[in-house]
Image 1 (cartoon, rainbow, N blue to C red):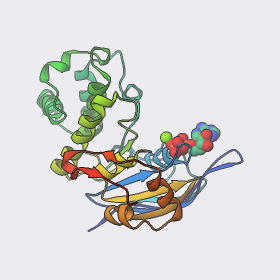
Image 2 (cartoon, rainbow, N blue to C red):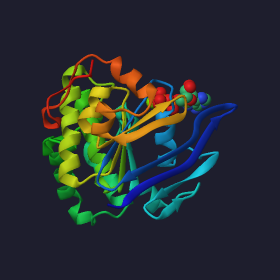
Image 3 (cartoon, rainbow, N blue to C red):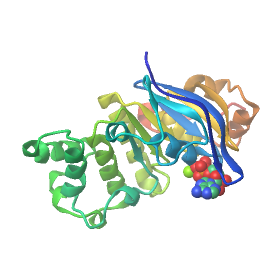
Length: 261
Ligand SMILES: Nc1ncnc2c1ncn2[C@@H]1O[C@H](COP(=O)(O)OP(=O)(O)O)[C@@H](O)[C@H]1O
Ligand SMILES: [Mg+2]
């Protein structure tokens, strides 16, 4: 298995405050790393620095064998796509779904102009939306549907790394599970490499191959999923796990996670 992403000694400070403190992390191709930690632990900062939205104060990021520098090329930007908690962050409300999807396809030369319409329909089909959605605008969809459109947009440019930052946290409880199941389906169908962030251990259990835990800007554990949920290394991980009641998770991930007593 090849390493898709390596983060070495990564440090980010906001003024005098250290939000990321010398983080080391690696992610294998075609696997999903679930990043968990309480609010304010630095998860979104890590996502943003990997995606190139902010620059690190120290350390480096390697995508495959390539080091990502501060000023990234268009090709490098294309390779890492991000899905945010709020889908509206990546959907221009004045653009139709056709415009939203075709813009990214054309900007990055993914397909010829003559093939754009067909590809847009395929993308919608992937996220279980009908082709007639193309003529509509973001406000005509529910929150869950808008998140599906944001997922389609992120996938449109065929990224080598998808970062999803709490992608289900802002959705109605009733649709959270269906969006999570969509991620699991896409993961299998498209062999995705994903950094999936959540503060919810049930979600992390459902989606991850490896689990990493952050606390106050530091990475306190990175373990294979089964090991994390049965024999966590860090005392803080045990604390997190013991605080959670029995959690319903997706069927595809195998039923319920029940903490040990
Ligand atoms: N732009 C910013 N300026 C100053 N402090 C920030 C900024 N963004 C985040 N922080 C702080 O950095 C810490 C980590 O934030 P964040 O990465 O958003 O954590 P998480 O996603 O785990 O909730 C928090 O204490 C937050 O208040
Ligand atoms: Mg966050």
